Amino acid sequence: MKETIHSYEDLLIMLDHLLKESSEFNWDQFYSDRERKVPFFENHPDENLVDYMEKSRITAGKALELGCGPGRNAIYLARNGFHVDAVDQSAEGLDWAIERAKEQKVQVNFVLRNIFDLDIEEDTYDLVYDSGCFHHIPPHRRMDYISLVKRALKPGGSFALTCFAEGGELGGAGISDWEVYRGRSMRGGLGFTDEKLKGIFRDFTAVEIRKMRDMENETKQFGKSALLAALFKKEN
Ligand SMILES: C[S@@+](CC[C@H](N)C(=O)[O-])C[C@H]1O[C@@H](n2cnc3c(N)ncnc32)[C@H](O)[C@@H]1O
Image 1 (cartoon, protein in one colour):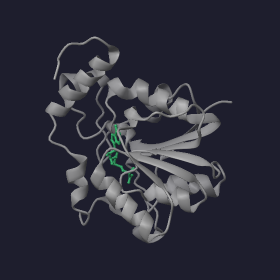
Image 2: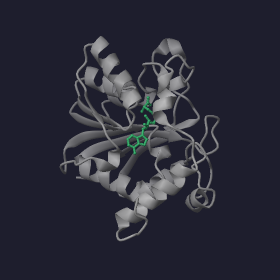
Image 3: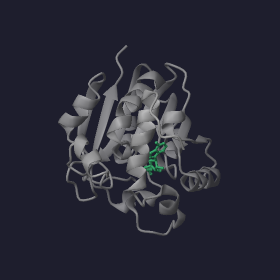
Image 4: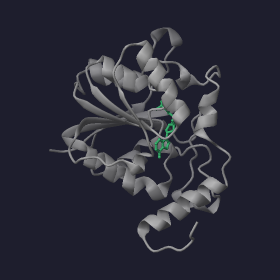
C-alpha cells in the first residue's frame, strides 16, 4: 500500500490503519458465536425506539440504520411500517439479520458496506437510526458521520442514537479524542455525556437525551442504563 498523503481521504485512511493495526477486534468473529450472552444478541428492539414510536415522535416513512448488526431494530422498524435500508460492514452480522428477517417474513434492504462508502441521495430519509455504532466511530471520521446523517435526512427528519455513557458499566471510555491517538485505541468504544452529544450534533435540534431504561428480558425490549439514548431533529 502506498504511504503517501495527497488528500484528506488519504489522511483518514492512514488514521484508520494506525488504529486498526493496534486492535485485535473483529466484528465477524464477534458475531460468529450467536449463543454468547451478549445483551444485544436478543432479537428485541431498543426501548427508546419503541418509546419514540408509541409517543409518535417518529412516524413511519423511510429509515436508514447505520451499523445494524443482526438487525433487531431494522426488523422492528419494518414491522412498524418503515421502508428500511440497514447497513453494516460485517458479513456475519448481516447474514444473521437476513435470516431473522426471513424467519419473521419482514422486508428490509440490508446493505453490506462501510457506512462511509455509502452514496446517499440528499434528503432521502425520515429517520436515521444508530444503536451502538457511533461510539465505535473514531474521532477523525466524526465529521464525515455528521455530514452523512445531515445529507441522508429530509428536512424535519429525525436522527436517533444509543451510545455508551461515559464510564458506564458496559464500557464507554471517558477519554479525550486526542487520547485515542496517543494510545492508538478506542478502548472498546468511546463514552459520551449529554453535553458532549449536544456539542457534536449541534447542527441538529436536541429533542431528548436521557439514559436508556433498564429492561427485563420478558418485556421483549432492549435497554441498559449504561447507555444514552438521544433523539435529534434536522431543522426544516
Ligand atoms: C455494537 S454493534 C451494534 C449492532 C446493532 N446496531 C444492534 O444494536 O444490535 C455495532 C455495529 O456497528 C457496525 N459498524 C461499526 N463501524 C461501522 C462502519 N464504519 N460501517 C458499517 N458498520 C459499522 C459493526 O459491524 C457492528 O455490527
